[in-house]
Amino acid sequence: MPEGEVVASPTRDDGGGMEEEAGASQVVTPWEVGSKDGGKINYDKLIVDFGCTKMDADTVSRIERLTGRPAHPFLRRNVFFAHRDFDKILDSYEKGEKFYLYTGRGPSSESLHLGHLVPFMFTKYLQDAFKVPLVIQLTDDEKFMWKDLKLDEARRLARENAKDIIACGFDVSRTFIFSDFEYVGGEFYRNMVRIAKCVTLNQVRGIFGFVGEDHIGKVMFPPIQAAPSFPTSFPHLFGDANQSKNIRCLIPCAIDQDPYFRMTRDAAPRLGFHKPALIESSFFPALQGESGKMSASDPNSAIYVSDNPKQIKDKINKSFSGGRDTAEEQRKFGANIEVDIAVKYLGFFLDDDKELARIKEEYRTGKLLTGEVKKILIDVLVAMVERHRRARAAVTEEMIDVFMAPRPLPHMFG
Image (cartoon, helix red, strand yellow):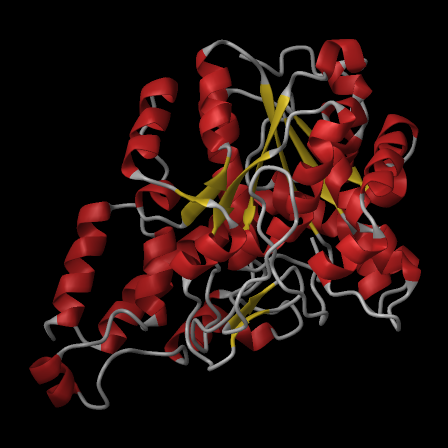
């Protein structure tokens, strides 16, 4: 999914239009995330600006009731904090109707960092809990157009990233991973063209901020990311239009991808499809602080799944801290846990809610020192990355070929 340097203004989707520009105090686009004053992202304001709906406790409880599973920590801790029409997905599921999941990855580096893992970890939970099929788009074409990558290198990185994705544990009997360079054509391409005809040049400029100096490939790309939202793009999975048009799509993603799907949701009713639903996450903060998101081009801003234990330890020990300058001051005044990166990372990856609450309270009140909290995080991350490394090492080229083969998945529902 996209990364780059184009600045765009978010627009509201009130059920059919692309209209009001958000305020300029923060920028959240597929290519840039940050606050103008260098502060942290105001997610409540983002919900209002984008026209999303806030996830609430009732919705989380409903997920538990419908699936018979505890809510994922990312739900309990408000990591996935906003949605569009997720209630309609739950309504249709409760009626016995079908939906599928769609998420993606823009392959621009050899391996994923922890922020890249977040949507895949959550998508696996959704796949297992609801027992539904999943399509994963590898936008190697987009990375070729946005990044300084040769075409063959973009294709190679797509397969390398597929190894990390498969290592997350997705069910091969319910999962189709595809590269745009390899798959786009047929019904998928026909949907791209239909979507493109629904969006004017003025609209795409307003949504994505394209300017006259941008090459036309950038303007061409949004329909490619939009097309997987429509089930007829995958006839080998869902059959022809008569069989599949009423199947809904749910997209787990970070909220910076929202502009693509506001465009898609505007086009969907005109093309006879349900609007895709979204469940959207906050950003995984960089090691240097939470004013934006991590960059795949800056290896020091992130923990990668290819990092060894020493690299993880060194990076965490240098991460931004909310603790005091000395042990004495920390014991006396405690830490500011609202800005502490080690605490924030534990909020993502420490499963035990009670243990997390204990650490936060003892760190806040000065019973725990910064080094002690970072040591807890290092142990959690080293174990997690090692598990992922072993799983990735077991992924063969033949396994990738199976996941990426356009094929029927006869038992993908239920």
